[in-house]
Length: 101
Image (cartoon, rainbow, N blue to C red; front, side, top):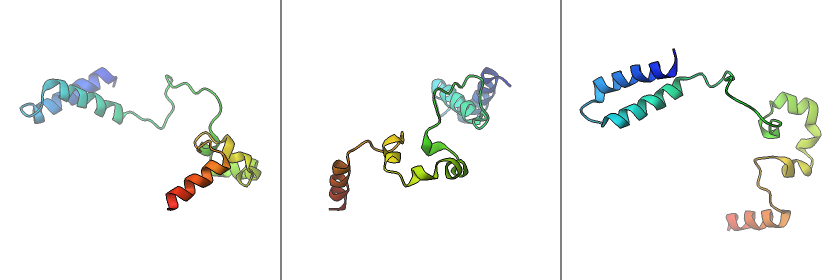
């Protein structure tokens, strides 16, 4: 079922249940959100484009252990991770101490 048809059906149901309590534009917005949430987000969409490499933190654990186990204990790993804070050792230590105080 395509999205517009799905939104219309969900909107009709919401209108039947909540029509007297909520404005129509809010019901339509909710119907659209429900339709989006019901889509299968696990399988790749043809509209989804992935640029660049997968961040190291998102790789499967078994792949990391087989191919890059040395990176886990390496100093350079924390600097290359897309999700870790990019701070100097001194700044990180100062931040940690301020959080502990």
